Length: 225
Image 1 (cartoon, rainbow, N blue to C red):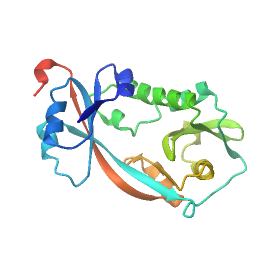
Image 2: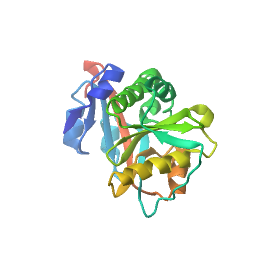
Image 3: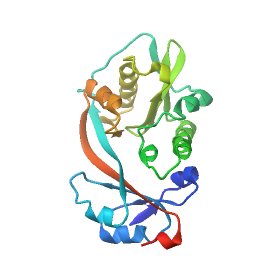
Image 4: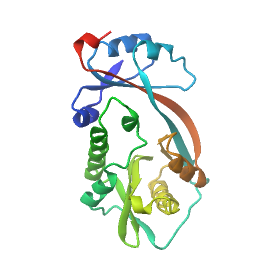
């Protein structure tokens, strides 16, 4: 009913776990285990058990999704994409970019460790060649990491944010995934990340599958329920 998440353990240097179901049995199993626990629940689910077992709210995730027919493609001659990406430059853009992430919203976790978690994720995607570099006038402006038909990790360098450029890169990457044969492109966005939600809406994406994210942290044996 719970599973280890070794990629998070590597960043936070503590045992980390994800609950696979919302049930009292799963909550009891989690609270007998030292470390950091995550559970995703429907927004309208009764949260009393979560609070009873020491879980606290961190974020709400929403799934944007779009097919090729609905996608509003936008192009600019200076905005290009390429899978030829300088890893060092991409990691510099990544570091500290995910302030809307649930790990940054968790008051029990260090921000530096949360940054490391996303840095490590980008390294894995780069090694798997699952990253598109986003270029403006030939300079790396950001990246989009993908897995299958999902855009899983994306960021822009600070000086390129808020300029209305993202739609050119995002629509280009979506187009590439449709060329690969996927019928739909999707992502996962924090409800607090208004800029990303507005971007996806402007491109014709719909939204579904909201999930509330709750965390729990127990580091001492005497704190186990």
